[in-house]
Amino acid sequence: MSEIDDFFRSRLDQMIDLRKPQAVLATHIPWQELEASVAHRFARQVRTGKKVSDVDLFGPSVAVVGGAISNAGRPRLPMRLMISLLYLKHTFNESDEGVCERWSETPVWQYFVGHEISITH
Image 1 (cartoon, rainbow, N blue to C red):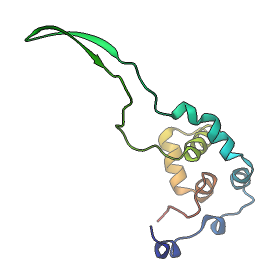
Image 2 (image 1 turned 90 degrees about the vertical axis):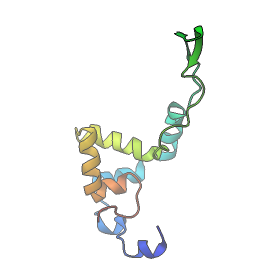
Image 3 (image 1 turned 90 degrees about the horizontal axis):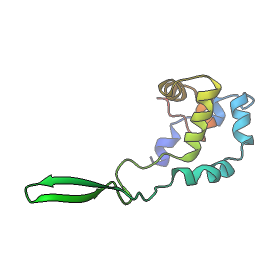
């Protein structure tokens, strides 16, 4: 997104009341420390795989499946976003779908997860 596109979008800190609990909490949580403490849980890990026996046209064979590191899948989302959504989900007793829908509609929640510009259209 270019700077011109951002010119026409609203900054969240100018749209919301910065005294709301989530806005205040967003500035007091040590986000970098939280990210560092959980990042190792989400790192791609080497898997040993399993030996699978099979019989094909040439007789019995053994293959190793599920080994190595997979590069499949989409890139991960920012860690702060995931931690924030998990916090909001449990605080407001939302489902996975509910927290995502409410996050997309609530500027204070968008500010809490670290966005600077509103995503609503």
